[in-house]
Image 1 (cartoon, one colour):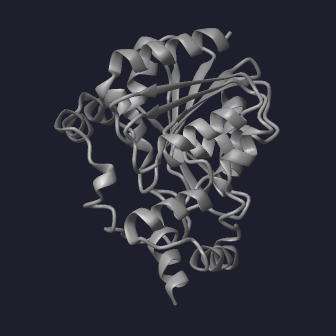
Image 2 (cartoon, one colour; image 1 turned 60 degrees about the horizontal axis):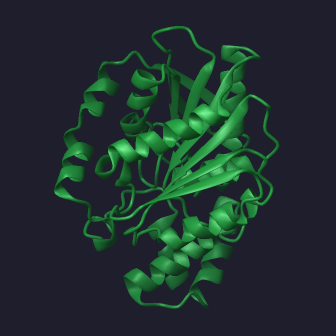
Length: 296
């Protein structure tokens, strides 16, 4: 059955090779060099990240990693990585928060990724509940005056947006979503057309039913677009203008449907997740200005 194929292809936890030659994920040679051999990799491996573990609402063991700032601070950034990624991938961003801003760093393996358990990928939906638990864990560790900013990339960007629509403790001050998709259904619809030249009907509705039976969520549930309509936190959207993997129009739609204070910045020539390298100074200026405005 084709729908079963698409579930296994995208959602079931297993080694996936179908994106290896995807033209929509092509980045510049400079960006690829930073991704593969940048100083952030040695920074992560040489830093004293403390392993953390929680049990999810559905009984999974989830792993996270915490790095205390060099000087005592009540400010912590909580990262969420992208599809098929790992917690350590966010060290590319964490190094700036740590060295420039003096923040504590927390980064987690999302369910179905890295050292965390899970037989399926949550595309942000169940992950949003996991992040509520991680946030509580950080507040318990740091104390009631801690201030938290959520920062996610790609699927992680959608994860923090889905989290933003939940009832959050007042310690969470702001959200940064880099290259997020609007909803899992819309992303799959777009990718089926891009990769296979197929319409969404009838395969996606059936795939959604299979996902509901096997992973306990539907593709319709996992919607950042629905969640940001309930968000009360300030949100910064960052997206590449040449992103054809998660189209720039999705960030624009999210921005237009966010009811809380929001900003959007498009990096004209950047492809998916490339802005931090291609537009480093512009990216950091935009990020730091937003943080200065919303973190006490």
